[in-house]
Image (tube, rainbow, N blue to C red; front, side, top):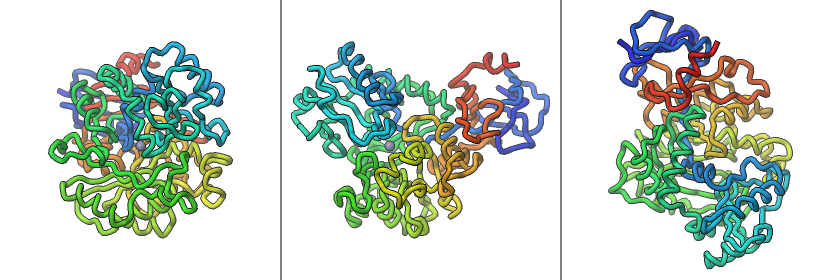
Length: 470
Ligand SMILES: [Zn+2]
């Protein structure tokens, strides 16, 4: 007797199968229709069934906080963002009004928000830029922090010095994680590798989060004795900043954008490797990317380190990427890759269409894992950008993009035994997409999933809503 049988499914990438059976949270059958006895049988009427997404780079707590606090990611003009901030601030009782997600480049502008635009109130205001590498504080917030910066703009280390202003209390953390968990499941995500603080993991363990989480702890918080293998994947280290905040290690930008000398990086990494912890190295500019690749070049053995973002990549650097290195990239970053977009404006013509070279990475046979960096969360959005990219350095097929968002992530986590595929013996982490999923991706943004399940149990959607489809 099976727990669940899904029939009449279009199993993505497996044309011979239309039926999947689940028992004890695992997939026990994938193939043509057979009559099975089961507790529940669901006719998918041709809907697409695929492995649950593995988002290899998330910030779950920030996602939830942005949902529950002030979210500026959907505002299409500067004035809209400021208006929303004014309205929100007038009603807010918070000690500090905290907002997320503003991005001047998506408003077709080059100037960051400044403290003056936020000085309409005595309440302290702190607004994080979308990349979370920069925040703007109004005068009251600067006074409260005891630090002031020109135009109220804080980036990288200076931002970290004032980050305590936005620190959530316990109730806020719990509520934020609940919001974020629901949102992630609704996007078809069943597993994430989250970049987080130790405290956040403690909350995640307490609240029964709907998505399987593997943690990457910020290096500054590293405390070896506390990291258990089941929950923690490894460590996150920063080699540079971001393109939007002009803090990436890019030729011609500030030399101190590169955080480590090669020797200091080596020592830093050795400390974690000796403790058996792989490292996720944030590297965006070509100099940081090159440094990360060099640092990993002679790493052998089972440990799977990753390079996060891997945006500006010289061909000779790519050649040196070793077999146990995973390139952990964000297809949704292509939102900045078009004509007149952030990449072109910030980097000039030389890199146009050459950033985030997914096609070249795959053609060179390197390991690629996709993640969203929660900008925004939602794999289908990034997949849509990668499969529709006008640039041949970037454009990949739907199957390749889905594979980077499923099998690629499983490999990164060392869980290719049991996650990321619709295959017998694997966990029944599955997504049900619309019937037309990916059939015509030309210019189409792939729709949100109909249902998501983890180990055969729905984390998003209802059986009724699927069964009642005609
Ligand atoms: Zn990130």
